[in-house]
Image (cartoon, rainbow, N blue to C red; front, side, top):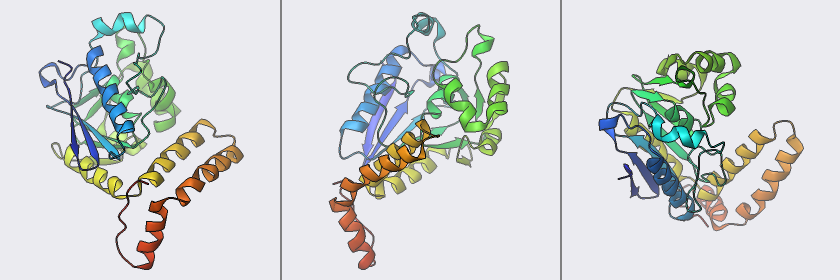
Length: 261
């Protein structure tokens, strides 16, 4: 059993981590199952956004290190198959539609790293974050060294990466790593509310924003290339039925109904 379950609610894909008896410790099988869920998000034209969440008191206490150690020692990044999208966003195809995450309790190691590969983050006030790899004789290899300094600042990132110390939900919010803090038990409800707002927006526009911002993040010192990219990709969006619907809804003073085409 992979302990990863999916459910479709309208245009939203809910991805549930369901191994609370083991504090949602990540196995390789769970990783591949999440990769397949994200491939479904990319491939299904009816899906516009996904919400990732976990059952139980804690989002995750970390990985099953005994199973992952030989994989990490192979010298390869997190492995993904052809029918998967890398949940860490390090290898091959990435999720092309927004991913929202809701976390609570312990959010350790891979929990932090997968959070850093999402677009919008909601945390319960009891969330504790920790990258404890240096306390286990290794160091992070799921994207924290790549993304955490950008997200929270060099000094804040080095403080927690070099010591393995925990930081709080309040710290994460103050640093900009999470966008909303809620009372424990309310994190999924709030994440779903945000997901419904995303799903109501124009899908081609939303996906265009995600692609353009990622391109800009990869080319921070080449604004001309960034402008060229988003203007080029904007042309087919402007010719879409959704763009026409946006104009018509504006003129008719009504809520737009987008079809994703």
